[in-house]
Image (cartoon, rainbow, N blue to C red; front, top):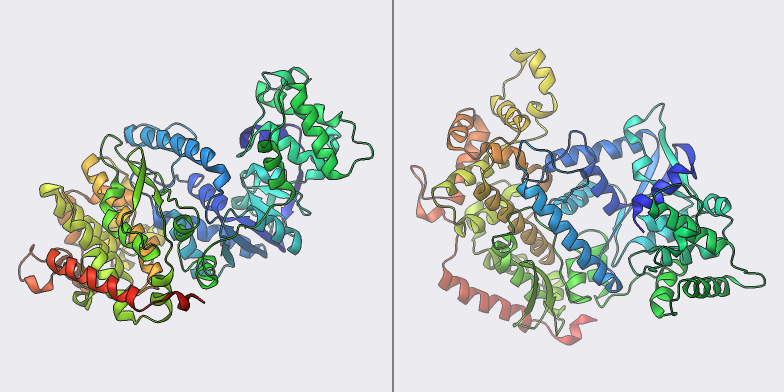
Length: 611
């Protein structure tokens, strides 16, 4: 049952109430929100060049500012691990997303990507959580899918739910469901947000359907767990003038409304309705539909093998939900990348870092990897070992935790004295990435573009007050920020596939390093990811002439920072640089250090310390 189909039916029949949202609590499906904000932004945010995170931050901040202006209190719930019962659905969706990624990657810069062809850049969720923390917005990362906790909290707090998930049309929500497509927050007026409020009671009243049968309707119409293939039987019973998919939904609802439910309790009503629907199309009963129905009747919060202190870190956003995937579900499904699918996946660039992440969670040194379209999606974990993580979290000194991080990225952080704290982790990532980059003479150009991006401040007058600058040029002094803003606005007209590949590899390394740093309890300061990477700007910059042109506009502290960054990341380029500044570790020291540090972690822990 596609979201668009059910939503279209509801919109066509006006089965909603036009409302103005103000002075209320609002339960928000976090994943739905960051997907929606990224995909529907105007102007459209980049998906081809690795993402536009400063632009995304602006969109997110504007959204929450609107809620604040209307005295709406948001409560955000984010998905954790996926439901194992939906594995087939998730694999199917991934293949569909990969096809979209291929389309975006092969579309010429001057052409328009087909409508609905969207792929979320890899750091969007991390940046979204970063913004929530920065703004002090209440949120929770769930251990599994967020739906059960969203429903429970919405009914407990007596608040409506904001999402795009079709399942919220089915759940019993006492204050109703607001679809993000109809939540017109950019049309705020007089402290109110125009929206359309859906309630299950109004839907059931229109179709004369017992509300207890809504889960049956969802299970046979089609959801993530089941679908009843009826060969057009239900559509033939419909009097709707709509397209086939609408006629089918209408026919199912008409059929269910005619089932005799007299004298039955809710559970018995569902059993009878399901049985008659299956018989109607010549199908036998099976557990698939019953399981699907139960997901709506009693949505259960998932359990986890993770210790309570690890679960708490996940819930408050201090630890990636990837640990749930590895430990509980024995699987890992990273975001799909927009890249050249004829080449090796860019995730291979972060493979050594990812291995450290796995080994801290497991005792199994011989990890079995499963691949789909050359992208790592599954890691077989035989013996879970939270012992090492417990030691690092509770007892290990910062120096030891930092050493593990250094070994994983083959760097030495002692060379970062002249680098601001917020840039220390990104610089380590950049050194690791650059040392393994195979791009020939273009490598330094791509590196310098990235470093200029580090120096650039999207919150400076060059970005937020460019209009004022254009009106009062004499009042503006930062030529560098103005130049960077102008380059971004010009868009990408010099598309270079090998440059795109290099930047995507950096993003993969950055994402995995962020998560490893979290697992090690942040031996390096958490960076502000939102300001680090603007894909269209960096692609525009990745040209020797442009680099030289922009470098000439650097002054004062920004020029000094840029020179320090160049020295640390590539000390053999430029005059006056010395080998002692290099932050890489030799392969021999790396191997020895790896054995010693990992050995130290395990030797300091025992099974009794898990309590």
